[in-house]
Image (cartoon, rainbow, N blue to C red; front, side, top):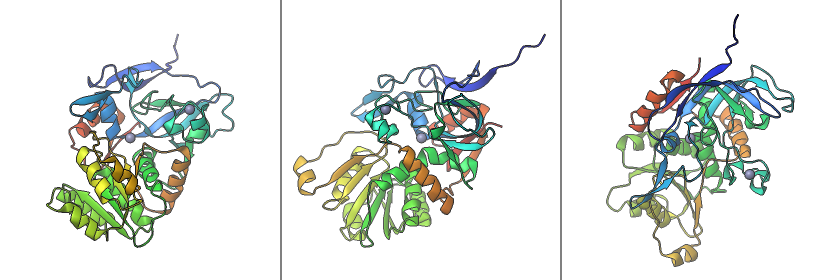
Amino acid sequence: MTTEVNTYVRYQFNEFGMGLKRTEVELPKPTGTEVLVRVNYCGVCHSDVHIYEGYYGLGQGKKLSLEERGIKLPVTLGHEIVGTIEAAGDQAGEIQPGKQMLVYPWIGCGECSVCKRGEENLCTKPAALGVFKPGGYSQYVLVPHPRYLMDLGNLNPSHASLLACSGLTTFSAIKKMGDVHDDEAVVVIGCGGLGLLAIRTLSLLGVKNIIGLDLSEQKRELALKVGATSVFDSSQENVLEAVLQAGNANCAAVLDFVGGDATVQMGLNLARKGGKLIIVGLHGGELSYPIPYIITKAISIIGSYTGSLGDLKELIEFANKHDLINLPIQIRPLDEADDALNQLTKGQVEGRLVLENS
Ligand SMILES: [Zn+2]
Ligand SMILES: [Zn+2]
């Protein structure tokens, strides 16, 4: 007698920071609007490191515990997923089994006013894949509705996985700037993965004056290569004056991909009257700034967290027209998920890591 094998493997952690464990679980049968997707590629993202460690730093040694924010153990990480449609519930409508799709992971409750407005990524009852629900460090992932599956167009699938988080986060932050005129400057603080992608996107969008800031000389050089007009060492003396001069004291927006005490402070000082400081980085810290300046300078301080379903659709179109993701990509087999995450935690990754489930 043979028994049908109805299980799949995922790499989950049962305690924060205590290693990813190969776990065999029962393969779910999609019901209702659910779609079962076989994972092909899943990006290993920096936020995975934060989720795995279980906290964000709040400055002065204080921590924001992710368990208190409702993340329940065990967790299967992975929110940058490209996979093929395997099966669907009877209310999922027409699906094309075998079709390769990008998964929108920032899923909300689907019912509240925020979700109805199309900002599911900001829902107070989040069900994000790889955070609150099992994600793509896995052979399969269950997606609650086909609307979260997006056609890749001509994109390379391993690169396209990065659009779901890094790409979307960057694109959504840039959209918050509004229109930038030719004589206005945009400052990008932090030229790591997201910062470089932002510079490249800004350049493709036709922004004329893009100023990059980073401590690392190597990253500043990369920033120039992908489209920065000028770059500065954020630790150099009189950096503020130098950047203001490069921006003709007309910095319409500052995109902060670090999000630490010093960078936020710098961003507030760089933005001109009516300018916007858009904070994306989760380095952590505390803000201390004279309130009257916020009013008299009419500065907007905007936190930007991932992006909406609509933003991702727009981004995929944009990426199909331009060679957006041209970062070095390292592909590793899914069963090396734990090692890959450690590699990223130690900062030993050039470009981006993507897991492949072959
Ligand atoms: Zn909601
Ligand atoms: Zn991410």
